[in-house]
Length: 443
Picture (cartoon, rainbow, N blue to C red):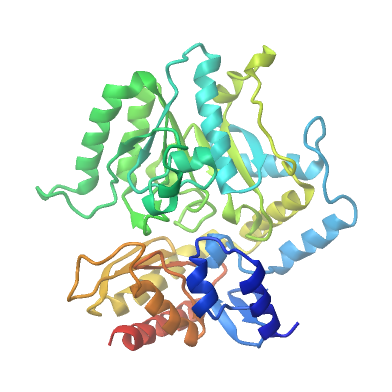
């Protein structure tokens, strides 16, 4: 099919995620992806685009990395899939053996699943059943941060707080307890906001801890809320409070994990370890749907013994051999290319790019954690007109697309989720496009 045929059939037959399809059908000229390599996607018409969002934050080592592709091809020669119930295979065992030490000294068990939402769903079930198996039936509630996003299955959506995503599910989701986000710049009295937010969190948890199974957080960066960033000190205090009150701490590292914040897992920057960690997106280098939930021996042991204590949960593709092969290859790339050692330099170049646009009248709150970066677009004449339904981000997106960069916004927030393999030259090229696009869109 030629490009026109593909687009016409797409508009007639398909339903895209997070998309108002009426507007899409009537006005959108989509990228028709034909191939990908490294930092770039290529349209069927030959146009090359910088993939500045990492294809929804997944491509942690870039597109079609040759080491990952070789592992994928090799695995297809012998076994593509097998059940993971009563069956195991070397790739899964090897992956757990390598990955668990990277997560922290206390982690000892890994449960495979399909994507970030299911990794969170597993964590929710683990936490609730952990206390049930210990005879603490009253500890069934979950606590989350304001603006949290943890996925789109019913359980994961229930602990999320981006209202525009889940308004239509009102009545279907279970109730959650909400803590104020620590990711605001300053409290009204001038104290660091995270301190005020934690003081309120302590009050809430002290009042409800007898009924709380777990607190779930996105460490350091609340992604879908608009790349809201907060200091490691908040997480450190929250970890201590959870331990004091016998509450499990779940760190959703689906986005923040695999190095992009500056450490392999973001919550390591607080010098703490969670009880349960959710992994996804970069887990298989962004090449296959693959995820995992990792936990401690303390949590695992609560499920041993009587059959009623079993974690009755799983997926058809749990421990998929293809996914495990590519996930192992992703760790090979981390080790052999020394990606973590290169991060400080690349983070500094990203900061230089942010500094270069900070004076633009529409740019507010330029921010960065590792090589995750963002800024908010605010009309100087209408400073209160923001959020997910604001069109400023899309005005910027269209200008950047003309200049060869795909930078899909989060409402009025422009953000960058770059692969760890991105080069300094590519970062500089990207921010040249950003500066030109700001001028073209807003003057």
